[in-house]
Amino acid sequence: MGVEIKVQDLTKSFGRSLIWKDVSLTVPAGEICVMLGPSGTGKSVLLKTLIGLLKPDYGSVVIEGTDIASCSEKDLYEIRKLFGVLFQDGAMFGSMNLYDNVAFPLREHTRKTESDIRAVVMEKMELVGLVGAEDKLPGEISGGMRKRAGLARALVLDPEIVLFDEPDSGLDPVRTSFLNQLIVDLNAQIDATMLIVTHDVNTARTVPDNIGLLYHKHLAMFGPREMLLSSEEPVVRQFLNAQMIGPIGMSEEKDADELESEKGQELPPLPPIPMQLDPSNGIHRRSQREPGLWCRENGVTPPPGSFDENMSMAPGAF
Ligand SMILES: Nc1ncnc2c1ncn2[C@@H]1O[C@H](COP(=O)(O)OP(=O)(O)OP(=O)(O)O)[C@@H](O)[C@H]1O
Ligand SMILES: [Mg+2]
Image (cartoon, rainbow, N blue to C red):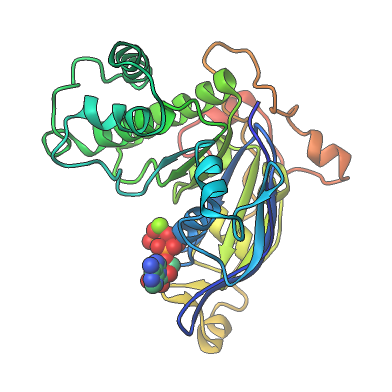
């Protein structure tokens, strides 16, 4: 059913360079979360800290009662089995064909026979649409195929938690849509807790149950999708609507002169909140909330046109 990740007061620096501080959030069991943030704000560092590849300076990451920031190597090894990770660069072994790459975690972490391994590998290859490409080397296939192979490998141990680091970077818009559908379908099927780092605003607006935004060395906001999509908070609003007007500049923060020159410029109204992407079989995911529920429960009027099926399907609706 997926497990919760509870992050409390997490702080990470490299040498004297602070990456982020006091990051607290709960990634709820079985839900899909998206983490956004300008390049270099430490999203990949956060994912690596969540699986214990990097140690935080302070704070805790509690999964099933174990704090992976302070637990023993042995406990960490056990907890890691709960995770499937799709790294930013795919992290395929270049000299191994796709079959062996996908089979790797099974050979490493289980005592399955080769014929059992074959059944699992082929099931996952089929899931991501790569049957027939098993003998290819990672260098011989397109970036999109590498991403899908990485996803197949992330899934072979039937993870309770799947972390995706920019699964859609370098993909064309059509393949990004297919990948998003695959993620939603997977969540419906395996109920794993999912955390996706992406720069794709459309993905952020339509796929997750919750959205977080890392900015300026802290977690600017984290909460239900509707909360962020109806937020007037300048950084959240600028980022989720891919606008130039706002506090975020080309090199992180704008200076006082730049902000002064924007005074009087009208921000466009918030666009409608689109419907959340449904699983392709039309049956709602267990963690999916009714459209508009968060807004209603919190007395927030969503932007006009929100949750209109036709509106959210229109190209460039965001
Ligand atoms: N192992 C490391 N040692 C030292 N500094 C590191 C290390 N890993 C990351 N950093 C630094 O941490 C900062 C955040 O890096 P990170 O890769 O997490 O950014 P990001 O938000 O994922 O960016 P992008 O959107 O471009 O992928 C960068 O300044 C980077 O140079
Ligand atoms: Mg990154």
